[in-house]
Length: 84
Image (cartoon, rainbow, N blue to C red; front, side, top):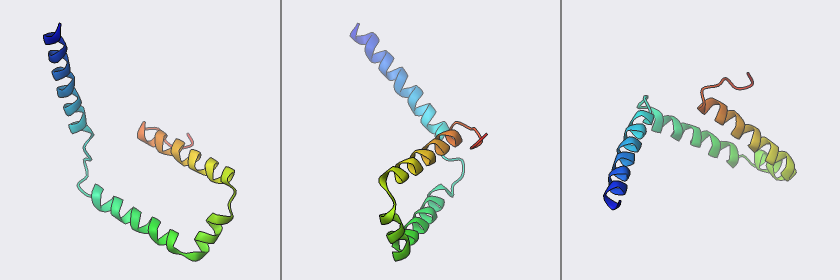
């Protein structure tokens, strides 16, 4: 029983490694693009006008905005066109 379990775990680890290799970004610019996006986000957040606007928003509004963004990202991750 224990040997079967270990064999099954090894098989699952191999499958997981293969799936992870397929998920690797095809584009080598992934790290650079993410760094650029983070720079833009940090620049936007550093602006005092944006900080004031964000502080004035009710939590419900921000919650809805985050949920909407999360849904759009999930649709894109699944290969769907947003809003389609």
